[in-house]
Length: 361
Image (tube, rainbow, N blue to C red; front, top):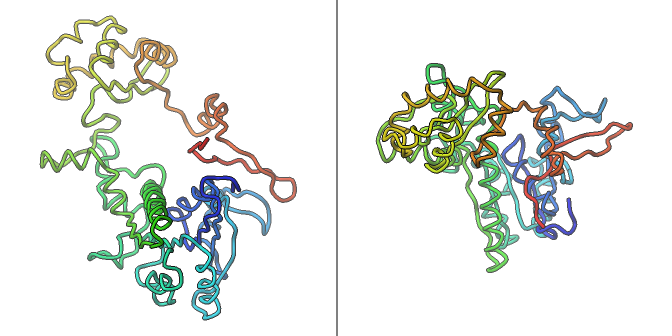
């Protein structure tokens, strides 16, 4: 936590567990907020036990999962079912700016720690509730983890090989998107509170957040009434914008406009493709993708990935390698940006972790 960060002086009460909420509050802690993580005294955050791998040893060990979203926080335990625990929360609320929780709808009201009750104690309090499906609607009371949301939101239906089964994304992206959505809404409500003295209640749903994050794919359906399908590593609206195989592996090329396509055609010594009416514009390339892509595939198989990537970058066409996690963590650009941090743990152990993506200067 930076004492001089943009959110210095802001206190956040964090009653969240697992990923969406902790990710949100971690970002606030990174920006200087005083985040107090309040956990169940009997088991704590579930992700403390979501290992291996583990960092540290013995009783002090922590799962890598828990570490990934819980830096820059102070910690305490409270039994919210007890009157004493509830009273401690009310006292903390008097001196806090933000409260965020991810209990099922109505549970905080059972503890008399709901927004209406706490608003009477601190009218300026910003209160954010993150749930699977929101505070209203027929799915309101259903449990909702990220994997289920990826399936229900339609994300899995558009992810994976065109001729294969639906796939989930490699990380809990619905949780991450919900955490980002919550952080934006909280900061907007905090600004409003500081300007007017009036707090706000924020209802964040994983399903809402993920559906909104499908952006152009949902828009494609709403405009065309045609259900989007899986395209593997291709793009529904842009061509060529996908992976290609070289002699020694695969790489990604992202041609985003007609000017870049013309440069690509010159680069591969096929300038006539740029003026072919089937390929001259992006809409035409999308329509005739089945003709264009095999032509490009045959050409890209003639050189190495490194050679193609450098040639493409030299003429201003976005391209890059398909890294694994080890490769990107040790990439020279990531190292130059200082994104990987290291701290000392108990018994001379060290911990490396990904730091804040946002660099406030």
